[in-house]
Amino acid sequence: MKKKLKIGIIGAGLNTRVKHIPGFQAIDGVQVVAVSNRTKESGEKVAEEFNIPKVYASWTDLIDDGEIDAVCIGTWPYMHYPMAMAAFNAGKHVLTEARMAMNAAEANAMLEVSRAYPELVAQIVPSPFTFGIDKTIKRLISEGYVGDILSVQLTSHTGGFIDKESLMQWRLDRDLSGYNVMLMGIWYEALVRWIGHASSVTAVGKVNVKQRKDSDGNVNFIDIPDHLEVICKFPPGAIGHLRFTTVTGHAPGDQIWIYGTDGTIRIDTQGVLSPDELNLDAVTIFGGIKDDEGLQPIEVNKEDRGYWRVEEEFIGAIRGHEPVVHTTFADGVKYMEYTEAVYRSIQESKTIHLPL
Image 1 (spheres, rainbow, N blue to C red):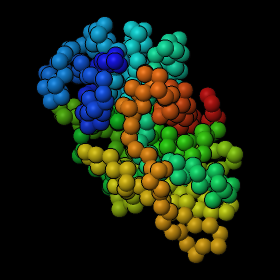
Image 2 (image 1 turned 180 degrees about the vertical axis):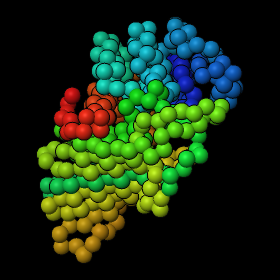
Image 3 (image 1 turned 30 degrees about the horizontal axis):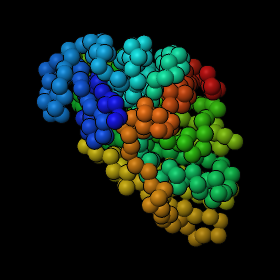
């Protein structure tokens, strides 16, 4: 009989409630036994909704619970480092929400501690937007559909015209999000699955709305860009132009273009992310080679279509059935170094080479 794995939840935001808790509860032999949220009252609401037996007012008390085998950290990035470090030192497996940490130093420290406990599983919630097409894109590139990659263009428009009245939120708060900017880390992680990590970045960013009020009416000053342009060098020599913005009205949906010597691929992702769900089937691929008149739809074979299995992979790794692929702490360090390189490039007005 399998040992029942007992999970503790720290931070029960939207993704935790929609994906992680139901995902764990659907796996045979897994029980979510405790939750700790920003307040005990909010934790009690989550516990009642999902029939979780224990509620902790303090996350440290949850980690000290000897009954718990693994923790799922669903907080904002500023707490990922202290919580993960405490969990490893308490002998618990760790699944932490993305982005991995506030900066590269925290990410490296998390990686080193995880390596000190090889018997424990360390996993980051992966960028999910391209799960459905990752195998297909990788196959097309490896089979030479585009030839040598010359250029990669990515545009992420997550907003409209400048709105100065919207309230402050955590992604705009450096103390909560660190060097992470908009959806940059999510899209970069997806790109590197296909083409590898950047060797250098040159970035410019602008803060168009420099202050916002929070829900209590307090004015918060902002130094995280709401418009960002990044030029990258990818292996073995491709140039990437990545745009992330929340201030471009009437802009098209998110797109990725891969231009090669022999062919072109376009990925459309409009509709993949709605307020309450992840629609992986909304991602579509178009392609064309030299002799084609234009781009045509490329079908994704059913057997190649990926899906969300984050909790399943985490439990599978704990049980020794599979390794963590999406996403390892080692890969998390690489995207945090990229994120920090973008920040340094903006601050120092120069190209930053990777790894740091």
